[in-house]
Length: 154
Ligand code: ACO
Image (cartoon, rainbow, N blue to C red):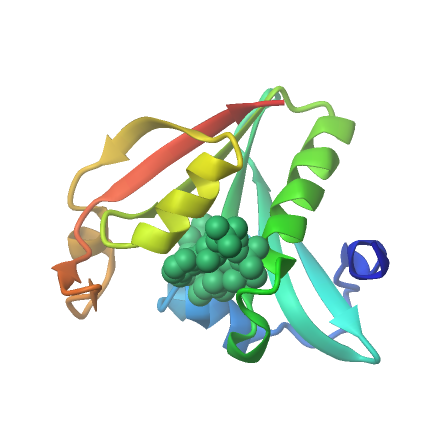
């Protein structure tokens, strides 16, 4: 619960934690595009940022988590789950009815986590990672080609 309370929006004068953002999305260009229209939330303890998520409005009813990331040394300790819950609560409080999240076809662990958290597959952006990323991306011995979209009713 202490960690949960430590999640807050990044202030305008604070440094953008690109290292964490780039773990979830290797394109700084795309990150900068969505940060311009989003709110970046950070999980910090003693001044160290160990997790982030980016909440982006899509329309008046739908918000999207464009990026969620936990520092490698802190992964697998439940922080990602807390960030997802925080994102759901925040989006609900802001009046959104649906929260969406997208991940690569090769991101098996992420697909597991999001579905376990109640998100359901609702679409696919074919060849998204081939069209939008300069280098081929591979994960779990699978080429990351398509974005799998998942949604949750809030
Ligand atoms: N591979 C395998 N299992 C995973 C993975 C993974 N990459 N990520 C989460 N899980 C599983 C955990 O094993 C755990 O399972 P359990 O509940 O059965 O024990 C469950 O998901 C919850 O794990 P948490 O500890 O809450 O998640 P964590 O703090 O590690 O955060 C996250 C998950 C954010 C995906 C983190 O692993 C991470 O930062 N990964 C690198 C960046 C990334 O891929 N971000 C998501 C890209 S998609 C997007 O940003 C919209």
